[in-house]
Image (cartoon, rainbow, N blue to C red; front, side):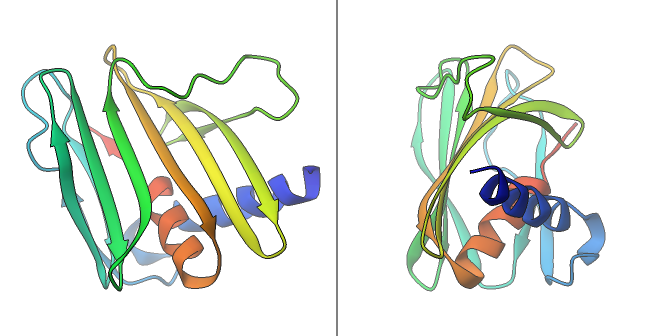
Length: 152
């Protein structure tokens, strides 16, 4: 499991490079409709990836990121995420994303990866990124988006 996590960390570090340093063309995009109760959130969206807001509530936002018609990544932005990794649990790793503390759980099956990551905002909200059973360019694009998170 540690080798699998190390591989995901390397992908995330590469994906987190700003300004296309990871070699993946994309565009810096402000998340739509975050409202005044949420921070301004910028992500780097790779070419070919579309983003849409799936559901809007008073205290939460859900976003889907799709590539070639397939959803590759989901993002919950709000105060009550359903993913709550326990501190100290063996499968939970701590890291930072965009200067913010994060906890992540990854799983690997062959060359396919699944991931849940909970990033703590400077405000009393969370970013819960999640993907299931990704490989190849889908995995690279999803990790690029996660690693590009910038809160302003």
